[in-house]
Length: 535
Image (cartoon, rainbow, N blue to C red; front, side, top):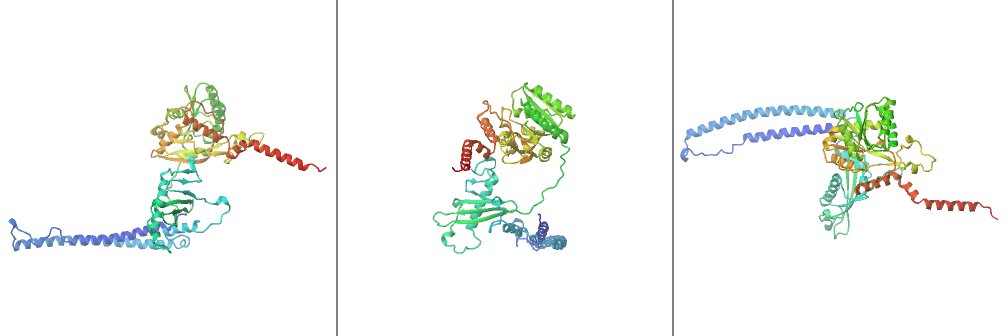
């Protein structure tokens, strides 16, 4: 919760600083005005190097006196103005102090008196000095460990590496700063530690850093445990640091109008007419019957299946009185990037928000507004993380028939996974897509082109918003990795195919099926033998 006392204290401190600056300015002005000019001297040579007479000195003294009188008058005026400003600021300061006394009276017991006290209170709340009573093992906030060059992490992120070099600049800067801060504590202690001998007063450097631990409590801050060891010294030095999180600060508040924004959904397609029929059922229920501010652009490659796609589109349009769609036939080899580029350029009505979609995607009406809220022209592009469903034949293999599609749309670890390595689904404005250079049209077939586009945005001044979205699902379908793919594309395709099939536990059950069946047979035989009556 934001602390109301902090802004008022900040203003009070600024006023005090202003008063000090005004007093310093008065003193500085006086010293400058009353000091003698640098070129003055007690005796001046006259013409041709001779000393001048009494009249010359009288004229010079009169001139200097007039100059000082003028400067004195100017200084008096400036001092009067400064006094008036000082009086005004004193009155403002008194009014603010009175206001602070009234505003802070009720909350003073609940809120810290200043920011430093608040930050120290965050350390007291965190599990730094004493343990906290937790409900279960899942409530523990685990540490992650690091050395000067490696991070060993439980949350592996997109790289999936349990050990990695700090790739992100903010992570590298953070750990370097922490190691240096630990060295500062060791080499410049605030007071001599009890029992510290001459050997322990040696200067430590970054090469003496051994390892560190860190963990973050989201509402309190990040704790660091650092260990140093100097060659030739028997003991280790440990430093505990804590980076507390401050109170919430208001950044901005604005009103966004999402319901009036037209969304152009672009789908590249080749064959797969059954999947397209399923996509159009979802499109009709969500976009036509609920949202009503969606345009559909289908870019179809090849001739086979084109007639069926036309019939599906015309049937849905006729039944729902819908005409906001465009079918763009392309007599070329399928390329997803090429299809999306054609679909983006087919729009001729100025700028528009686009959703690059696939035929295997299922979305909700809530997602359409999420798309509108997180993409801004010339500011932000939106890259939602899709929840990818596993093979229903494996997930629901113990049932005679898989449940209806609506019941399969569940965010469970055995039902699917967050497809955080995929960047194909994205919401962005047409002008941003064209200005960034669009897709790499040299890429053919599956994959890679969406990653290249994503990297273009990362290298630009636009903000790429990346987050899991509840209303966006990738439906399972059998994936074929063609021999014509490049080695990189083929590797990515196989990786995607393997991850799409089932969860780790379900795959394990398949791998060890024979062992499991053998165990069940032994158990059944043993049970049957024990149940026989003794002769």
